[in-house]
Every structure is written in C-alpha cells, then in structure tokens.
Image (cartoon, rainbow, N blue to C red):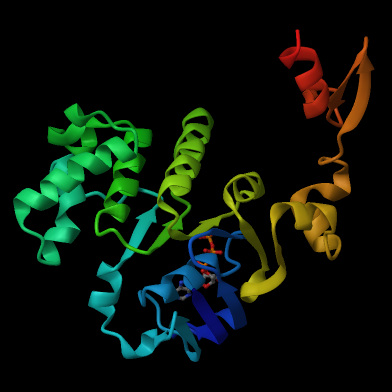
Length: 279
Ligand SMILES: Nc1ncnc2c1ncn2[C@@H]1O[C@H](COP(=O)(O)OP(=O)(O)OP(=O)(O)O)[C@@H](O)[C@H]1O
C-alpha cells in the first residue's frame, strides 16, 4: 500500500505542480492516474521513488516513511518503466534487463538467466537477447523496458506513459500483454497516462486529476462511468457527448449493442451464449 498524505510539490522556479494530494494506492492492483498534460501526474509518480521529493506532506510504503529511506536503495526495489524505454544503447537486451539485479548484488550468471525468463514473460523471443536496443522496434523496446522494470522482482512497478510513443496497434497489443502479466504477477502498479481509454482498460482503480494534482474523481472504471461526479469528469470520459452510450438494437431474434454512431460494439452475453453456445 502506498499512502500520500497532504503532499505538495513546488519546484524551485515557483511552479506549484501538486497541491495537497492525498491518496491510498492499494497493493497488488493497478491504479491508473490520468489527466491532461501538466496536471502533475509524473510529479506524483516520481515522488514514490524519490526522483522528486515533496515540499510538504508525507508518503508511506506500507509502514515506511520513504523520506527516511535511502533513495538509491528505494529506487532499486521499485520498478520504473518510462515512455522512451530508457534502455542503455550500448548494452544488449539481456544486459539491459540484468543490470539492476546485478547492481543489487545478484551474480551475473543468475541475473542473466532470470533476464531470459523475463523475456518470455513479456512475450519477447529469446533470440532478441543479444541484440542492441537500436535493432528493435519501438514496441519491442517497450517490452524490454517492462522486463527491466520487473527484473529486481519489485513489489511496486511505476509506469509513466510507457506505451505513449508506439503506434496504436502495437499499443493495444502491449496493453493486453500488461493485463496478462499483471494477472499472473499481481504487482502494485501505478500507471500514468493522459488517455482515458487506456486508463479504463488497465485500471482496477482510476484517479482522474485536474491541474495541480487535484483529484476530480477516483473509483473503478465502472463507478466513474456510471456516476461522473461533475461536468469536468463527464467531459473527460466523454460521457457528455454520448460517447459512452450504447443502444440495444434488435437484429432478427437477437439483440446487439451499437455505439452512438450505430457501429456494432458487441452482443449481449446471455444472447451470445444462447445463439452461439447451444447451436
Ligand atoms: N523540474 C521541474 N521544474 C519546474 N517545473 C516543473 C518541473 N517538472 C514539472 N514541472 C511543472 O509541474 C507541472 C506538472 O508537471 P508534470 O510533469 O507532473 O505533469 P504531467 O501531468 O505528468 O504532464 P505530461 O502529461 O505533460 O507529462 C507542470 O506545470 C510542469 O511544467
């Protein structure tokens, strides 16, 4: 569990990035922090591993006040995946993944063997192990980035717009891959994005921010969609434009769901079961 208590951050140039932010992030679930550019998402995330220190307030990981922990040791036990993978260009894929465990004292052979297993976990062919980052596609680089984030077997994984720079098809693939990995590993994932679709797909809990890190609403995707608390949230999730409204349309003996443009979104599950399962 990660607890923010009345956390504020004012940068040295006077920018008040985050004002009085309080949040409890439950363990072993994915919490997505979503909001427009500049609302403070990255600042909030970076305070968890002390890449940024709060001006006031406190952050606890379970019972530990992180201000009292050594930042380097803290960073080594928290996975971090960023938008442009941040891979070391002159190291192979395998060594990029094995580096952090080795810095923490894992013997080289063991770290490399674990890194190969991690390539399997993130869906990368082991043949990629000896390649250099520049020889990989953007999507493959992000997979390596995820493997590297998981390499120290951290309880907490911070992900800062990790799929923001890849094309939409690969992005969808990576999002589904992350769901698969999370179903298996159950880490405490804090994921930052400006994309509400991504937030709803990945988040067990979604936290929608306004500027200054003010929480507009938090809840499960279903709770937020069913009851946007105000016009800001309704607009952010597209509910105000009827974007989320599905209509039931009769097609022969079945009913399908269509979106606001009349495009087919799916079929009701019990009818699909009747129609497809009991033929
Ligand atoms: N090192 C810094 N010094 C001064 N101001 C900063 C610094 N880092 C961030 N800021 C400012 O703090 C505010 C919040 O920035 P932050 O990067 O947390 O937002 P964000 O929601 O992650 O935005 P984006 O989606 O564009 O990355 C912005 O106004 C930003 O310009």
